[in-house]
Image 1: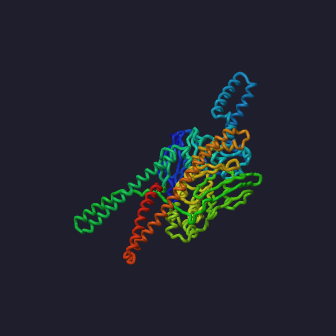
Image 2: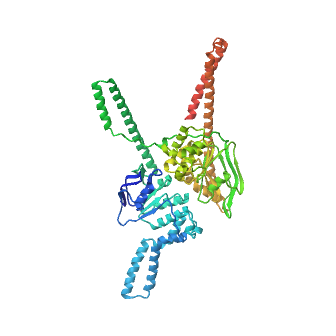
Length: 640
């Protein structure tokens, strides 16, 4: 055991953030701390590293072990270049190397006992230098910088001129190069693109020390950690396994807790009814028996109701108007900023009902594409055509559409005055605003809370084409799961930019990768993209390389076309089944309506006294019943 947290408690004023939190970390173990925003995750990390004092409890670090900590926000104010800033971490190694070179020069002129002392010191230094991987310190720095997304032409940028996200990457690089025995990371993936996150996953998996991570990136947690410490309502629970194992185990425990709670509530209600009945008899014996039951009831330790299970929330939001089948068509789209060309002659088609994710490294132009579609930027070349009856709803990372002086409730009610108070509260509850939370001012909300308000408004809008730019940024895991469910149920069309691989896996029906100034199409989720990425890159590289093997290109094209064809056929089959189902439901409705009309007619005197008309209607009714039987069977078959 390298680290132990024992009964850690912390309050800020009257708010109890942590209560009796206990867990331990083994040497080389990779663990995550999870919980909703405000659960105390960052507070716990600060207590572990000594930045905050706990009200009670203790943190025990094994003797001689070192801690390294990366906070969420970094404000490096250094006049060094990025390379020199990371090089400072290796200062002891560099000085050791200089000492070794100095000894080598001195030994040329030494002899006797002095030479022996120098040789002993030289041997000792060389051994330490090798253990510290001293001969590779330059390549190690370069590898970490490239892994974290810095191109070689950025190595000489001055740190103080960098953005907040770039400074965080520099701080992460310094921490990784310092190689402490325990690394503590607070949201390390927030400022990394997909390639850098994948690199960091591999680095941490192979790291020889222990790692504690606070992150909302569930795909990242699944890949890296083997233990989850959950913070909920101030208390901690430890689960073995990755995020998926934790999620499944938690759901089972919650289900058991809810069952026990409901059973106890039912028993309490039953006893209260019996007691009331016994008292109503108003006899001495029955009153005594009632009192005896009351004493027993008062001794019961009442179970707390478990928190709501969010995956049971059924958010179903429908656009008021259905768009045409062709939602968006882009042809030959190009955009440059000065000499920097982002993309050239790209095209895409999006059909109704699709959920398309645009992915790619930072700076490739993903957000720019969304802004071009929304008319917020002019294109250099190309056409953007929206289909019939398409109404766009746009969500950006900055949430500019919110009014800071309004409450959460007012923000939604003023935007949609036709909604009742109950309807407003229900939609806000679905996005985790309950009780007095709905009366908080927008200006007092965190970034994640403002994001949830914007998403709630967007999902209520008449838009049938949602365009979302990094919708999961600043959202906690629970909020992400609610959004995932809402998008999966949404019958409109969705186009979004995201680097959240778990979110993409849960929601995307198609992926467009922006790479090499062009778009590569994948008909599937993120796992499918990973499976086909190498094949597609081979196809595109051989197409663009004159010396590329024609046979390799043909083989790759053949497989992709077959896969594409199979997916398109499957999508067409699903659409046909849905259309057939809708048609059958319409036919059933028409026949049932006519059947009801006939019943009304048969009760009229002028009809049941007219034998010919009566027989005609009875025959029609029999035909309707026969047709309905057939339609019911067909509906059941299609609905399976």
